[in-house]
Length: 275
Image (cartoon, rainbow, N blue to C red; front, top):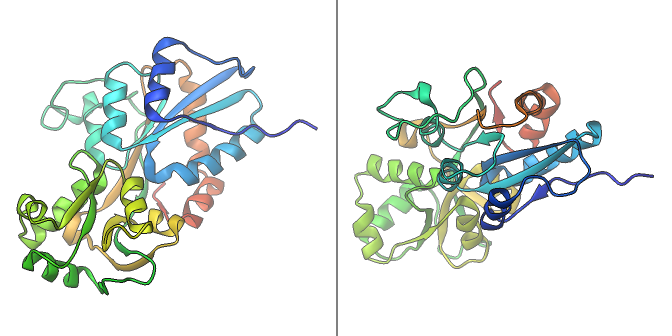
């Protein structure tokens, strides 16, 4: 009996090197689709990829998960990519000629017209390590401790990471100075949401601001959820790129993700499908 295929997941640097040097890998599949997706989608896309390849023997899915800003840069620098799923509109806009010069400031043109859509919504949550040693109760509690400039260590995403950008909006909503907080030793950073989640899971920080789905997959306790007023909606856009060598197959995979079956998997992981 033929063993089911597994989606291939490469570390970002290795993936980029492989794709810049060669295409394909002796998998025997007729078509390889390369999906660049936000790190917060790693578990759910691996599950969706398993199912899709079981039903499509001629397709092999190759995933690259990292911060949306890093993925955008890799695409811009020539990495092979068929599909991009970002954790924020900003990174997709920066690659979309239709987005306008005010957001696509470099004049990049990578998004295939007519394929972009809003796939799902996530939430920005305040998560704590097991046992909540610092006894942090809510976003209001965190704000009060940060205002004092001591007594808490918060993990957050860096500035080019969507979850970090949402956290900065929360600071702005509160009227807090991120640079001053970092200088007082209240903040530590992660290069993507998985790194922030790991810091919370390992208890090296008192709390972290991450996505609800990452807290769910890591088994972390969520103490509070940010409102849209605090940081806006967390919308993940998806699109086929115009550099894809297999645009039809890429659109078919995205159609599967947004189908009723795909939406059910997304919902089980804590995402809110939008289409």
